Image 1 (tube, one colour):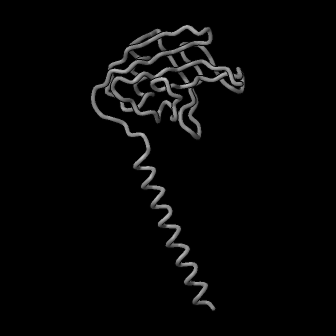
Image 2 (tube, one colour):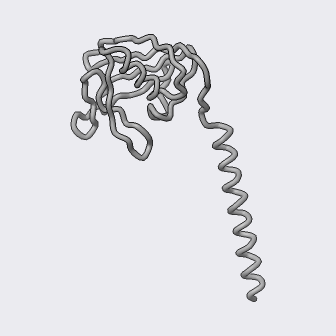
Image 3 (cartoon, helix red, strand yellow):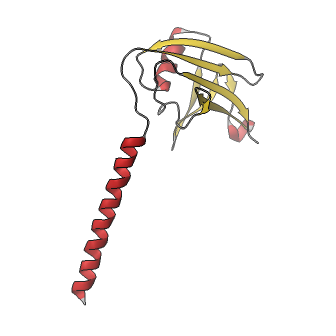
Length: 140
């Protein structure tokens, strides 16, 4: 009886390890990857009044937050801040306009080439020619 229980435990452990390996391989294959080298991107900010400001950015940054840091350092008209959380950097203020969900019932939504972003600013890879739009949105 003990041999059967031990055998089931070993088979279960091997199956669990195999399942974890499959998840790791899928994550590595399908997750967004940064690219190295010089890039020209556009960062657009659509504020709470619907007014749009566009910034042309030339950068070597691999992630959006780093490109935004470079922009903030080189252009006084652009600024941002936020909080690190479980899912990365939650941008709360852009160009002095606050959008904190708990306080304002609003948030800064990130769009990548017109599509709703899937990553936080510090996890969003930057690719040459892409447009990253931060839009002030009220929660529904």
